[in-house]
Image (cartoon, rainbow, N blue to C red):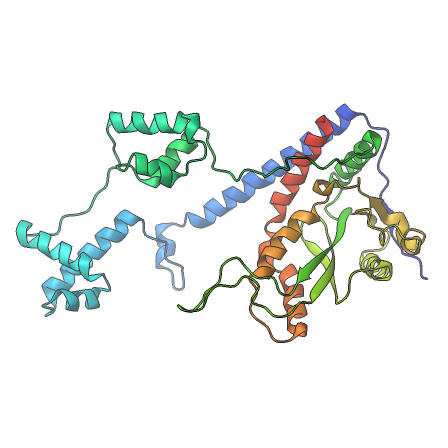
Length: 383
């Protein structure tokens, strides 16, 4: 077997806990800076000048609800005044508005002589504001949504209630489910610390020093929880008849998925060895590299660990899936896979699956994955 021309990244395993914590804090500051820069860039793109709105091919800005209502009223007034449309239905057809909107505007004009400009000041009485504040601060309403609170104070909009929740430092988050009997995950504290230290030091290097590898199964009969059905067609979850599965080996860095290999049978040691060989050969020569993977039997087989690629492998702490960044990426891809189009040939399924890993929308999620793994590292380091 030809030698893999890569340099293995060697972390400093003599670092103390305080030093690793300091390095992780530095990484978090970097990620927050990148997040702030990305947010600022999005704001600059969204805040186009007035002259940009009139450029040929420029995408028009979305009108606010207030501007949209007044635009419709002005259009109804213009059509009624300058055209021969006589009925509500004719005016609705000319303006593209709902007939009830036309009726309300014209009846108002009949009595007042003009269509009043719509305005909404969003001002609530002090009593209403106090009632919303009391509901927001009441621990009994922890599980209440903005819609639930609106039913208690119907004079307020859900948007106003959400703003008040945010102003009080509240966030409506999904509560993680926990087992009544937690699964015991014994590990060596030294092994855990060494792995955290390795990931931290590798992430301080260039973006492509540390890679994350794992496998994932895609049952072909799985579908989304929601689908469109005919009126008399009862919904059935697994409506795909194929009972086979596709098995994927994938590898990613902190930016995106870098390589994918699809198997029709469960992954074995030969498949892992071939995948690792081809991937490492595709990298630049003498590049500092390390691949994090779990402790599956086909990963630790002698065929793999005693080969040339074995030196570039770092085995994760057993059952500590939160240390492997690729797990979050798999969750997003599997959610997309369940919503895939209905296909007739398995070759179409394979091609669509490979293309899904390459989609830009998945790469755009990786900054969040980086922040999540840093949060996990700090949490486990303090434990």
